[in-house]
Image 1: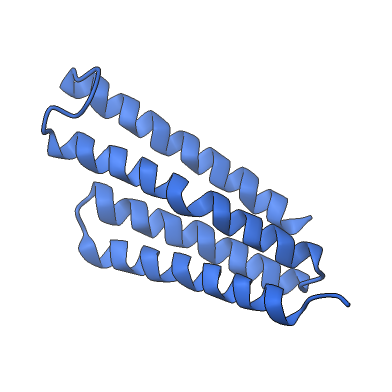
Image 2: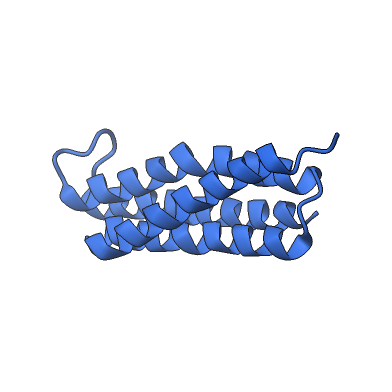
Length: 124
């Protein structure tokens, strides 16, 4: 299955985001909460945003693949999700709003396309 590869890659990226939060907490010496620290707020938000969108999107992609979506479309959508999430993280952590916009648009497009494909390619 193709989407399982992207799920694994995204899991590694999630671990990276988690370690980034830990790194900032250690550097800023903030154990709980964010103490109003903007750098930590950005790291935590990037981590949380990932968890808000990626699991549901991976489920949509998995179901589309399960219903028979062609492998090249699965690869395109999986790669787009991964790239979109990297852009989104850069946009939040490095405060580059344009990157965040790109990441959000790509993530939403993958979700919309996947949901649409689930509706039109149902096996009878």
